[in-house]
Length: 111
Image 1: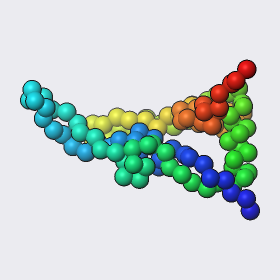
Image 2 (image 1 turned 60 degrees about the horizontal axis):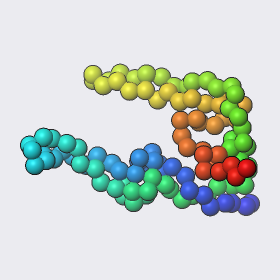
Image 3 (image 1 turned 45 degrees about the horizontal axis):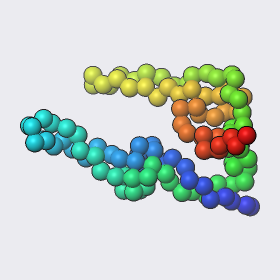
């Protein structure tokens, strides 16, 4: 079994790199949210992991796909006055989640 070492989106902070820590007051007395670097990715938003060669081939296929046919998956959620969604745009041809950075976003066209 062959595995390849890649950098993926951090599973703890979802690639945001910084997490809210709490509220603080600035010099003008206004409240703001303080953020700290994610303890898992140390503020990079990336998480190293080993994947199998088959999974890497799927990532390469998603990188060259033109994503002509897409659909939205997920729902709206309501709880205790809060509203959020987990709706994601997904390519029907290759299965790529178009709301997250993909390998193709990092490949530069040199032509």
